[in-house]
Image (tube, rainbow, N blue to C red; front, side, top):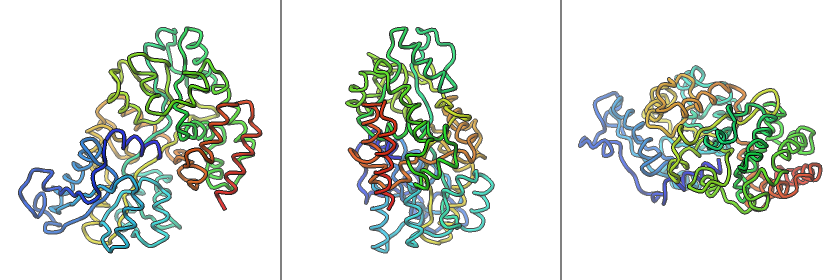
Length: 441
């Protein structure tokens, strides 16, 4: 999720002050102080908090709350949390001012809050809706110790490879690669045509963890992925070494990377997007998350669909991986309004309000794919849904921050060192295990 957090800051600009609150009634332009209309909750106020702000995510989410207000008559007051959601909500709990409903950007925060008793179990009717509309993996991600606490409202996929269509045409590539072997061949074909195949923003270590997680999930499978994410197997396991060897097939060739390995290690993620889709492109492909589409549209002249497209991260093993993240709604106060809002958020209707506006993927399998505004978003959403119980959450976000989320340390630094020297598979595995053993104590 760390890359998604960066994207939000990038796209939304300065985060609204935490105290800024916007009511649904005001956002609707209505003058009824009691809410958006008549209904069973007329006269009740529900408070909601999340990271979403600005004219992009914030305004689109506001329309979801507007729809709930119109259905129920409730007044919904929405407060952005700022980037550090856990710290913001923790301060509210300590001040006896927690919102009724909050959205958490990391599964680990749900576990922490559930352990502290800060969030309430889902009501039975909402649990039933979640069981009906969401795959088992999403049910488990929203649960702790067998109790269901969360509804995953918004998802993201990190298993997309964005490419410049003209570069493929110029190199005579008719179809995007579906397997890792074909991916390596495609890179070689691009290189032979005079184009640098891949842009990598390796100065940001999370970019490399995303590569590793996709390759590892496809090589080892979901069960081993779960074991490694909990450090139940060591990073010296053969599946880790095989994944590193696969990465070396790309990372080990200077001519495959924009600027070579040294250049990649000096390139931050923001610069990796125009390196493929800007006015003076330096590469043809950019593996990364679905939000790269927004970066392309916002920061380059390239058009999604005509100039830029994506293909799924290629299958290294038997199946192509689908790795991602998500924002989970939790109930911090057990009120009638909070219960009704949680039930609404578990419905396809709530997700479709945002889906129609774009920039949104729902893990709710009951959502009509026709709700998405274009074919690219429909394909990404379908991949998340089709992955079913094989979908896996970003592994580095499930790890202690000292290992999976610290600049210049842990997994980030070790994978950067491996990019600099992709021949040292055994040494890299040993360093990963040493760092993980310390962090997972």
